[in-house]
Structures are given as C-alpha cells and as structure tokens.
Image (cartoon, rainbow, N blue to C red; front, side, top):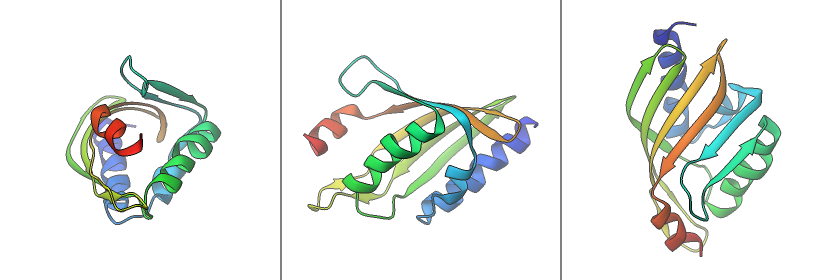
Length: 131
C-alpha cells in the first residue's frame, strides 16, 4: 500500500476510535502484531502477537477505563510503510479519575495490516492514575 493508503487506514481507525468503536482498529492488526510501550521505566513493555495485544493490553484497557475507549487523532503523517499519529484520549476510570493521556504512535503497516506500534505516552499520568 502507498503512504496515502496507509494514512487513510489510520484516519479511518481514529475516526472510529474517537466515536468509541475499536473494531476497525482490532481488525487491522496482523496476527504477528507487536505493540511496544516505549521507555525504560515500569511502564515500558512489549506485547508480542495480536492475541497478546487483544487479551493483555486491550483487555486491561477495557477493565481499567470506562467503556468505550476513545482517542482522537490530532495529527497524522505518513511516509511509506510508517504512519505517525499524535492523539489525545478522552477517558475516565471506573472510580471517576480523568484519563486523557496524550499519545504518539509510530505505526508500521504492511499489506494493509498493522504490524507494529511504538507508543509514546505520558507515563507520569499513567502512574498517577493507576497506582
């Protein structure tokens, strides 16, 4: 796929995520998807394979945040097989804490499927919200 098509894929995914629909996002993941929380602290982690992403990462999102999970893209840039998305969450926890993290996802897309996401986020907000 071209950079334009890869960007359009992420635009579609985030249009749906901003409305609380994660199904196009989950459907776009390759079976060998890798999602890495970047950094060196306690929140640095790699989820290897679509099942780990869906069960471990996305499963935790669904239990630690009130559904539906929402994220809105503020900027999307594409170069070849890579798409960079800056986004802001619009979420809260079951106990009422606001969780509007800011993200930068560097996405690797091949053949119309998400192969990898390197996620940069406000880990201080994560610690303050979930510890």
